[in-house]
Length: 261
Ligand code: BV8
Ligand code: ZN
Image (cartoon, rainbow, N blue to C red; front, top):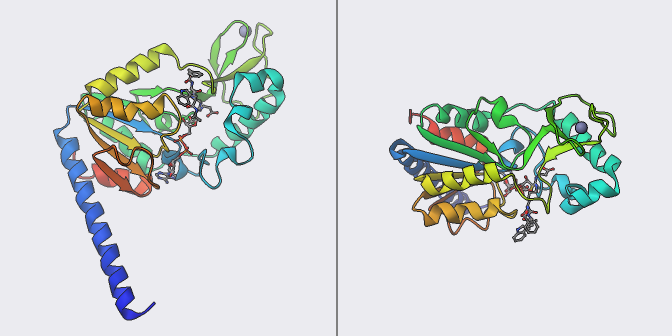
């Protein structure tokens, strides 16, 4: 790389980082002004904790299409295979801890009167980081539900028996929303209210491909919210949002909140 090109490259990097710094400064100002903040997170926020994302290179679905495992049809067909997969993820997650992005959001919650963190993640890391006002719209991998009496219990046993059963004798399943299953009405209503009322929506680490979560940003935008996206790669939302900041959540999110409160 010749000197000129190097200088040009440095200038571009310099320019890019100054653009990013300006963007982060703008978000800080928006957070300071905001009275109602909603946050939407996806697998990307947990990537920096070593949790594989769904569509990333080490993505969970690398070998399996989502429908093959995360669906009631797959569970009816072969509950042992589905439980084998969820046990593998539970063992992996049992060794993972929240990263600075999770902690920054838990910190932020303490300073904003109207706040809701909507997550697509089932890893429970937001709650572990101290977030309280959380809507886990796709469920939680540490909860199980009986397919007979529908009782929901928290179970952090690792590993679980391959076909875990309930006290009533019924087969347990992960208390998770599978593809083709509707989201619980309560968290959907809570989420849509927060999207319609917020004056700032932060979208962090999601590819924006899975519905209904993929429809949330337009709802907030249509109700006048300022929408900011933080993601490693561009997404279908990047043209819709007011500000799209590319980078790692563990770096960008704490910067967005530093010095604000
Ligand atoms: C339903 C639990 C009623 C399981 C999950 C409309 C149009 C088309 C299809 C549909 C539609 N409506 C419904 C559907 C069908 C389906 C759907 O959306 N299919 C998709 C594939 C097209 N939706 C459903 O089935 C939903 N139910 O709608 O019921 C109904 C039913 C039938 C028909 C009509 C209506 C249920 C969806 C929920 C399924 N369960 N999870 C489990 O976890 O085991 S979804 C699961 O996948 C996750 O929870 C998450 O939602 C999604 C993965 O997306 P992301 O989290 O965004 O992760 P991904 O890897 O894709 O992206 C990570 C991003 O992070 C990347 O952009 C990357 O660049 C970035 N990143 C990486 N590292 C970092 C980073 N960013 C920052 N920092 C880093 N370090
Ligand atoms: Zn039962």
